[in-house]
Length: 402
Image (tube, rainbow, N blue to C red; front, side, top):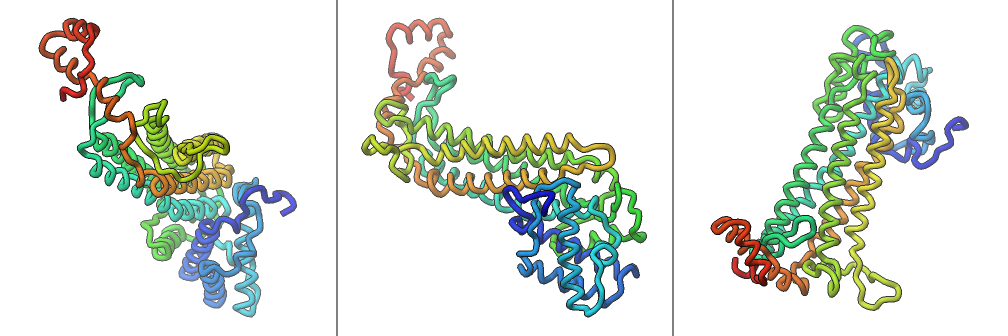
């Protein structure tokens, strides 16, 4: 506590990590008893203490900083000491934080295992929120499937398409990024538990890794397995960089869609004025009846923060040295922020903007007159130069001819 005054979140402020660590300690205790490392009395007491933590008890006993030096040792010992103290009360005998609760383990392997469990649990929210956003865009596609609008390239007039075409493409992109994010996190189901110090497995009995992973799979309902190469698992954290990149990709996609909504709803008198967004709040403290695209702007701003967090993860992954990456706490903090920002952005965008979009802007029909459909078709039959000459001579009804 003296070395790392909490800035931002504490360990206890991040329940997924507390739960993940309790699951690791519970699984380790059961594996240790099965392998003769831990007696039944202490195992039962440790198991009960872990279950109490999983049930939400003792939450106030994890005051250490979430981000700290030492590769997670502060968090590991915080958990060991809380469980040991409670287990000793339950067992009526000495339960040592290192000798019993931490038996066959090291911070080297337990922290990344608990971190993986926490992130696997937390990623469900942003993936679900992204898919809900995609579903909302699909519903808008169906609603406006026959509503024509002017397409643009380089912000210049192009040809007509429907609003349904636009929203269906947006939905496909969001669904795709949700799938990429979900797939990226699957690598975390292979955990380095049992690797102990630098991947050697020293201090743990034979088959501890497999036994512990099997217990974790039962506890979590996830397809957890022990790493086939624990040295790799502790030294190379590129899977976390992949997850961060997937999160940034989802944020960028949402921000692009939000920016398009913002542009198409601009005006409404002096701008594009094609799309109407929900008036969720007054847009100005001085200009009457002004409506600002506050929700798209919120989504865009959160995307900047997600990309910053992703860069933090990349830097921390690259900072791994020799046999161990000790930058895990900031990786976990940044990835957690990515997941929270993605979930918040997608949920707010869906509920406060997308579901209320309407293609009734005052300029949509007027802008269609500038479409180049007729001239593109003419170019295909009479040649590019001929169509260009006729258009420059004064043609203006290209879109209405469709």
